[in-house]
Length: 511
Image (cartoon, rainbow, N blue to C red; front, side, top):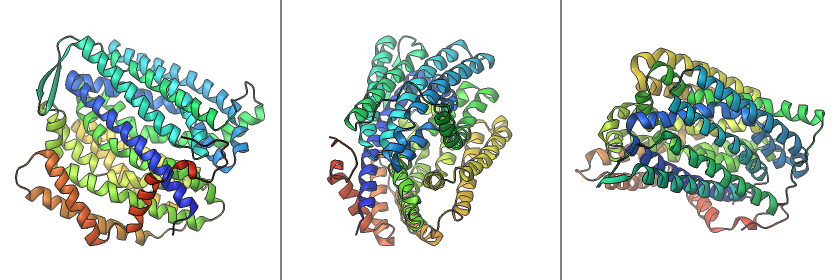
């Protein structure tokens, strides 16, 4: 029988998953349109501008968001007492981040058009820092539906405004419909690709403000004490260091490609990176809903936290293994169908990157569980080790192998981080490794049946082969008992029951 805690986690996961799924789907469509219209080099420039700015975004937040989430999860009063200090630190951090990104972009000698794109991305980054703080408090109160709605509306705003700009300014024409191929008759300045991100951030800020008003979270005071600032900095800095290392670990390859290779190579790497990491909304959705619950029970019942970890990893492997297997087998067809022949050099990097997806998924609950148990320093050490390995591998492989070398470095470091997480996590909580291994074997057997069906299937369209593969995998799961009926009932109840029915300390009932 499910407990009130697991029911709450399921509902929050459902809200987060639905919002993240729509957001990622719309984002992928927008990225695909950009790739079609601007080609390999233009896509590389766009991808780099966003990635470069992301490296500095952690300074704008400095670990404030996860700290506020944790403190609000413990008690509303604890979280509210830190809002003034959080606002002050975020304002200072945003100014420092914007200045550093601007200076480094100019010093690196990037083309003027690339620097202009970075400037626009910096503005969006500053606004992002605001809505991240708003959403952090709502997450702590387990009111994630505001964020789910906000990210979807923001992504719709991004795509609609971006497509209109590209279509009107570039006079885009449809070359073919099956598959869709687009071409611009007039040159479009790449800066226009990033202006919609500012509109997206403003939309999310509005959604966050609505959430604060409905949940009666008081606006931050305009002043705070030195003691409050030091207290929050002491709590947030481990999160900031960990997040900074995670950003460096994830995006240093693109930065090094910009220095050691060309924008075209970044384009070849950016497209498979976008495909492989588009699925990160799944572990993020689960952890976004699960982290407040982890923080709340970590101080009361470590055994229950271990069970939550086992369950989260098993569910994530249930999704990650078939995705990795399916994309790996159909990589060339997917690249040709979505991006066209110009992006064929992206096939091998895609196969290499997608192979790490199960480890990437499992690393999310492991890292966040260490944070929830106040073991941020352990998590920081693990990510630091993986980051050093990743950067060293990139420096070694990128000059000779380009995008494929970056993919090999990313996959290898993800596997190493996963192994280190499993070993170190045993010192914080008790979990059964045999449960995870058993689930992986059963799920892997079902995925193997799916691969066989795809390879043996007579010639057919890509969508048809994907559907058949999914059906075979689903049947294989029940044969191998890789999925339990309780999992399906939990998901069903999560979508059928209204989140307003949750027991809550909130002063209002959300809609």
